[in-house]
Each structure stands twice: as C-alpha cells, then as structure tokens.
Length: 394
Image (cartoon, rainbow, N blue to C red):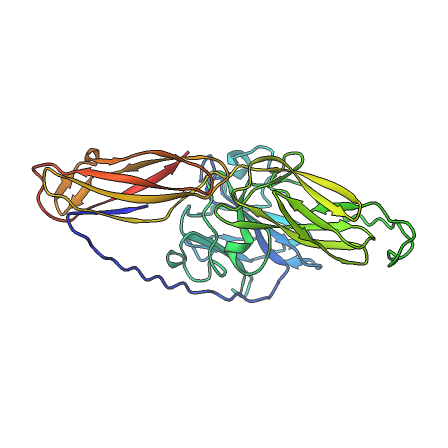
C-alpha cells in the first residue's frame, strides 16, 4: 500500500534482512504439496494442509507436527500414520467435513484445530525429533518466523486459492504458485506400454508417429488448464516421443528446440504472465510432422504498486499533488480503486474525503501513473499527516 505524508518530505529507509533457512534433507520424499490458508467460507473449519510422499518408500509420519506462527505444534499427526509412496495425506481444521469450501473435496485424514494467518506467515512439517522436513511461507520474509519458509516465501494468494507445489528446489517463491485447491480422493497408477521390442533404432527405416505430452494441469476441470504466474515467467515441461532428427515446440511466437535421447525429447517452453487467456495450442514439430497440445490459459488478474510512498506538500487552503505508479502484472485488464482512512498528525486529522485518488483500468503489461490530490482545509494545523491507501483490483 502506498504511504502518504503531507506538509514536508520524510525520507524513511527500511532495511529488511531476510534469513534463508537451510532445511535438512531427512525424509526427502515427504513434502507439503498444498496449503489452503484463506478459504472462501469459514476459517474455523475450512483451512487445510496436504502432505505428499514423492519418494519410493513408505514413511511413518506418526507424531510428526505442523508448526505455524500460532503454535510450535499447531497439529500433531496420529501415531502409526503411514504415508505410502505417491500418496497424499490431508490435515484439515476441525469441522472440515462440513465447513470445507467444496463438498467434492475428500474428507481429511486427520482433523485438528489449526490456525493459519492470511498474510506474512508460514508452516513447517517436523518429524518426531523436531527436524524440519519441509516448510512453506507466504508474504514478507521479514515478518515470518525463522524455520517457517524455505529460500524466499511464496507470493500470497487470493481468498479461496491454494498454494500448490510445482517443483522442489527449496525455494518457496519458485516452488509454489496460486492454484485452485485440488483435495480429491483417488490413487495414481503407472502404465507402462512396451510398443517395441527394444529401444528406438538410431536410423529407423520407418519414421514413427510423433507424440507429445505436457504433465501439468492447474484445474480439476476437463482438459489442460494452465495459470500464469503474476508478473513472472512459468516454465512448462514438455516431453515428445519421436525417432527422427529434430523436435521443436512453439506457441505465442516463441519456438524452442527439444533435446532428444533414445526417442524421448524434453524441453521447457515459457508461459509469460501476459499471454492471452483462453484456448491455445502448443505446436510440436518434428521434421515433416507436427502435432498439438490444446491448453486453456487461465485468467490472472493482478496489479503491483511500483511506488509505495507519496509525499504531498501544501498550505492550509491549498492542494497537494503527487502520483503513484501501478503496473498490470496479469493477462487481462485490471480496474484499480482505493480505500483508506483519515490522515492523522498527533490528535489532528484531515478527513479522508479530502483525498482524491482516481480509479483507472490498466491493460496487461502496462503501467499507469495515478494522480493523488489532497485538499487541505483552511483550519488544518501545520504538521506531517499520514495515512495508508489500500489498492483494490477488480
């Protein structure tokens, strides 16, 4: 939120030291896969944390604890709880079965009263010895307890959205993105189809058909749906199957060459935050063949303040002016409006109604300078008045 000072410029320097917490590698297969800390419905019964075993062996997670800003043992898993390879374990707030946002979500494997803050917070999974197995934080690192995040905390998500893990690099900002919660029942099965009797020949007499896959999906809805990262670039991991000499992938005017070995081609294609929402196609090209992967790019409505302090100067009866810069960091137009409170100097006040900040609609990738005016009453006592403006996007 922009900070406003009136009558004289006040140069404030804020130095933030972020401590990067190196987490132990014990039980490396068990990770925090999803966190729903700000449900649409009630937060007394609607919060949840999902654990997942990405390892190859079952893990005894009995008596492990989830630590949060509220408590060093916000939840304690029941003795004897076993997390099988590839399986998920859902820890949810007491009353989850009736209070959860979606009735389609699975019941919790363990219910216990948990308290997850909506801003500048985090949660850590600890084993029976108190060793941190995994952690994820969201918001400002300087405001989060040590041990409750890895690397840089993830960006905060909107109400009803989950922090969902995509990778595991020990850096929350890179590993977690905003996504629709996906607390669904069901197990996965691996299918191995032996189509040929051996590896693909280096120079086959017959060129096999081109195939491709994108193992990413951000919604339980039918089809592949992808959500860009607000203000950033997301890497899409592609895999193609072909026994020819070259394979490339392209969309939105970007083309990348895939790297092949034994008929399997892999590579990354960027998903920029400004790519247009809606139905799109990733085109895979190999020699004289091509195929496509249909995807739906989801909407991202987001804006970022590029200046957070505005200084105004005026005399009683005059008007102070300044500007604040806002950038659209999503892929659809965003409307910006403002709310705030009275400006205060000691016991003196200037009513919020004297502050005029125009609303504006900003197009994707664009920045707008928004004028801020303060009409100072004749009765105002000279001094430095302060208030905070909250930017609302819609």
